[in-house]
Length: 226
Image (cartoon, rainbow, N blue to C red; front, side, top):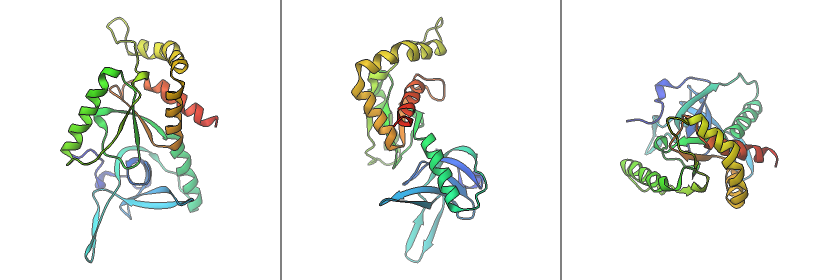
């Protein structure tokens, strides 16, 4: 079963969240059957196309296989007169999506993302096991690391009386301010990972409301202030 959007369903000129070698967002170009991304290499920033995972072509004795798997449609990209406009727009969108929240069950292999588990500590081993099972189904050998930041798990349990909003609000207003004081080094690690780009906060809640939204907001705020 495919975990990405098939080539024939991608919309020309739309921005997508992608799993690819060199970025995590790209504008789909139907003519090229790929995604135009902002690429940084040896100090140079330029537009580059990574082909859709479903696309492959043969060039003599060499087979070209796509490296970009679209995960989610984001928005219609504007029309650009110059390439520099497109590059600047992609860079700005990239800053907005530098820290994401994902459910552990929705993760697929990524060349570019860093994963930080922020659920309760007793769920970390289950999260690791889920990844191992998923990687085994993909053939193994992926060697993806799930960093353990379970100290930021939400101590507030969901109950029939106190629902998800209550638990998330209490984490934001009570627990997280205290956790920042107790674990400043761990907070700084998350901010540094977010500043480097492509950080994914992993939990079991998304796409439902999650305490990870408070952590993400703090990381992005710290990045903007630097």
